[in-house]
Amino acid sequence: MTGDVTGDTTGDVTGDVTGDVTGDTTGDVDADVDADVDADTTGDTTGDVDADVNGDVAGDVAGDVTGDVTGDAASFIVVEVTSVSFSLPSPSPFVHLREQEQPYRGIEFPVGLVEAQSIAMALEKETAPRPSSHDLLSSVIVAAGCDVIAVRLTGSRDGTLLAELDLMTPRGREVLDCRPSDGIAVALRQTVPSPILSEESLLE
Image (tube, rainbow, N blue to C red; front, side):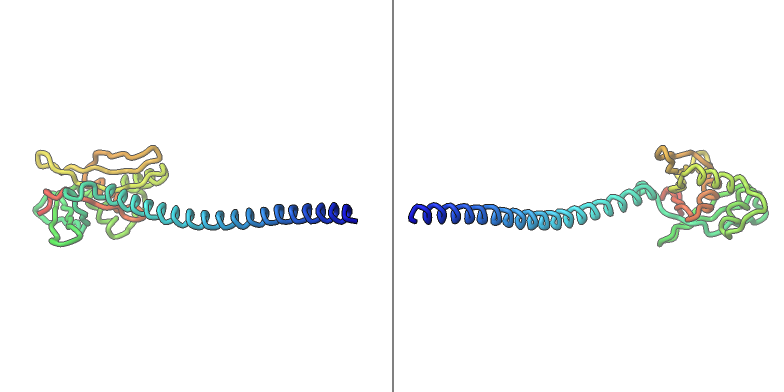
């Protein structure tokens, strides 16, 4: 009896207890620990990563957009077309630009009759029966998958106003020399009119 009881009891107790305690406890502990660690790690990491990524992206995008549009903030000022006028005895129409914020300095320059009409029509959101050169160029820019970032009046040389058309193309950034009147006519024809910028020394 002693042998049977001791042997069986010891065997059963040892086997069952060891098996239950080791197997179940280890499994439960592992599962719980893994679940907690996964939950905490996933939650904390995801939250931190989302916050950091969102913050970084928002900051980078805001910085890039500001830099791309205005260039050097100390040199370029955002302006808008206020009118196109033609007063005799002047031989040419004039385009009038004014900065959007105080002190509302301005600049005006002569353009050809065709360019004046094109800019005036763009201001009034009017379309011609047949596309003009500026209409065609604007359509080509869109069809090519490009965006007009801005038009910049960069200075003057021998009494001639200089400008550049800033484009974002599928191959990257392109800055093209252009006449101010052509650049403005194209900028105003974009679905969302592109910014017109003037070098600050040109404003009066």
